[in-house]
Structure formats: structure tokens, C-alpha cells
Image 1 (cartoon, one colour):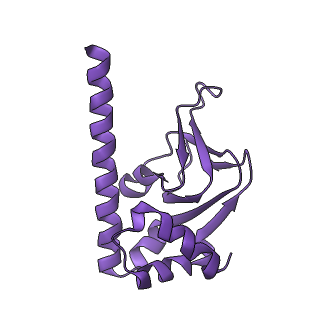
Image 2: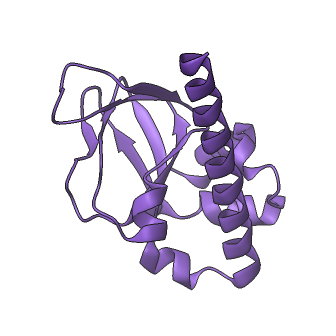
Length: 148
């Protein structure tokens, strides 16, 4: 896909709200990092050693585990980030991620991440940190609802 097609998708995603328009153009121009997936295509496979993070630009995905393949643990839509634990902690994949329809995602691996300039790296890290804190807060809230 061309930058002109990707930039409007990036502009809609809250994750990139702190990025300048020039930084967004740089991201949109990363042709090798923009990936398209077809319905039911597996994006991430549990147990793999793939240290990449994905930012969902268009479409939705289902999260499953091998132990219960028919149980959908979560559904994510455009704007969601997944795979960050593998990138940040160099861990094996703990879940499967499957495209529900046509999906477009930005894939950032460690090699690419190390090559971008430090201010952009810090923006990505800040966004990852915000996202992880929100997930922890949401999980704590869910646990409190269960025990009440």
C-alpha cells in the first residue's frame, strides 16, 4: 500500500496522537512494515519467538489460546496494539491473533525499533507504557468486580 493510503489510517488512530505529522508520514512510508492480512489468517502464533509489536490500522482480530482454540479471549479493533510483550520483554508469544476480516497493521520489530530516532522511540515507549498501565487498571477493576 502507498503512503497516501496509510496516512489517513494512522491519523485516525489514537496511539499516534502525540506524533507530529512528519513522524506519521515517516511511519506511513514504511512499506515493508505495513502488512495486510486476509480473513482467518493467523497474524501471531502462540509459542513463536517473534519479537514484533503490531498496531492495528484497519479491521479487527480475535485473540485465542491453543489450550482452548474455540474460546475467543478478546476482540481488538483498529487502534489496538498487540504483541508488545514479545517486543519489550523478548518473550515467546502467549496467544494467537487471528484476522476477523481484511486487516491492515503496522508491524514494528526490534531491529526497526532500534533504527528509528530516539525521540520517536521514546514516543512509542511512552504509548506502550500508557497502554500497559491502562490494561493493568482494567484488569484490577475486573478482579474487583469478581470479588465483590
